[in-house]
Length: 319
Image (cartoon, rainbow, N blue to C red):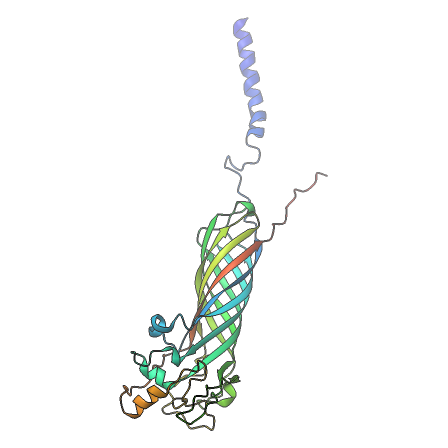
């Protein structure tokens, strides 16, 4: 009787096993774990401001250590970013950028004395529209509130650029060498129409932006970020200079050759001691520096970033 009872229990257990197995593997396919949910794309808006630095014919890269601090200017911009993959995002941005340089930032007795003698300067306000692709090095999280505390990234893209180089008109000063009347600084004038190098260039050009950045999570919705971006422009006239102006055709504007001005138009520095040395042959006589290729500039930005919340995907209601 005991053997018969035990046999009945075993038969009952084996008969019920397939039924329990159906619930055990519910939600699995071929006894493998169910696939994870796909990455939930989300968007973010940001605003940033920081510095901008120009590299070109008036301030080549080799002069950065000498006058880089003096040529430092500012930029500000807004960005919209779509984080559509775990490691890839697309960003569109608008940035207002000011760049400037001045030959009078150089030491008249230093290694860049020929550039000081040239006495050119410029200021350009640029409006830049950019579209860039971002590679998120550590990746985005599927759940926005669980995003990483630190998120480094690198990027590459394309920009459209409007620029308008300007310079100050010649300072007004008394030509009497014994005069003690201080010079009077003049306002800014557009340089393109002057055709200082007999070139009718366009004020619209492009650039290739690339760089890196880092976001730091403040809370569920906000980050603070740092961005460094380098741009190579398609134009060599962001500064209105592409030649040392030795072989440039003469024009009626006094903006073309400013080497004989007594006072620097932008800084009002007294240049008469240097001009006297030049007249006596006590200067190098070398041509000023000219950067090869297109003009370039780089920016830094501190950004406040707001992440838009993901759309909640609700499961379908039972019928």
